[in-house]
Image (cartoon, rainbow, N blue to C red; front, side, top):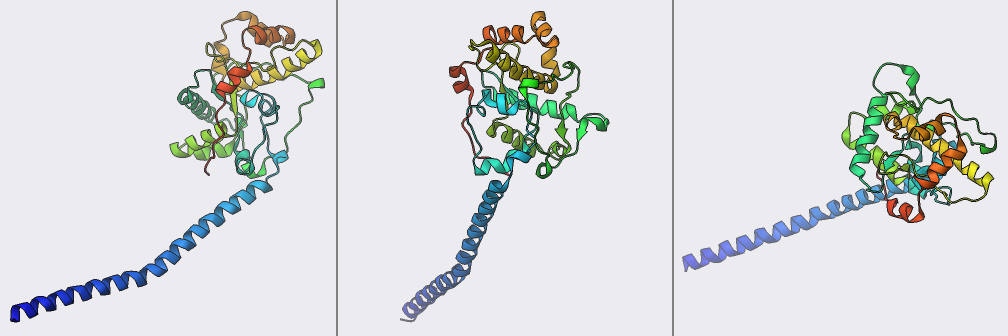
Amino acid sequence: MFISDKLNFLHRSSSLKVLMLLMSCALSATPLFAQTGKKKAKESQKEEVKKNDGSEIDLSKVEWPEYYNEYASGGDFRNGRDFNVEERYFAPYIVSVPVILTPKKDQALALKMWKETIRVYFKGNDPAFYKALEPSNTIEAKAVNYDNLEFPQINFGGDKPQTKIPFWVTDYLNDEELFNRLFGFQVSLGNIVYCSEDIMFPLMTNANIENEEARMEEAKKYYMAIYAWAQAYPKLFDKIDDPNLKFALETQNLDLLYRFGQHRFALSNEMRDNLRFEKKNVQP
């Protein structure tokens, strides 16, 4: 009887401890759930603020690369592509070094080339190459008047990129995760120039124009895209394998340049669709 009573006591004691433990958990869970709810609410609030910030961004104040509106993503922006609210938030982080994408869609190679270009650009101590602009303070973009277009001076070659890159990019160079994220911004926001597989030369949109005036207008836009490509990737320009193509560029022979685009570097609609990346959400 004594043993039985002891077992019953231990059973009741154990049950009581379990009950007390459950009550304790229940009481402590309430503030925990409340805290979790507050955290989720706070995160949602931050996301909402970010979206509101994106809607507040004036895209006319973003300094677009000259090729962007006409040739980024094979001309998607001239054909009506626009940024959604979240993308507008990241628009000031576009830099004037396009991502090079060929029909193989080798994004690893595109990442390697893009990062190497950025890093080479910031080697050395010449402050004239640096452009100290913060993304939030970029100047108003200049509209390009193609009717009275003044071509830039020919200075394609050289070991160091000649394009202007904002100095804040240096904050990303020593952190691979951040650097890769900055590259991701370029891809998500369409900062891509589609290029041929053989020599990675920019492909021309609208390669079947019959009207002579419209052809020359397209050739001007194509020239500007090629110029930006060569400024950012001078070693690729040096690899051009056709002296006539180099001659067309150096003499600004738009008719000859259009013919090269039409017969060797044409970007078909099918190729554009195959090269296009699905728009992805990017994280700050």
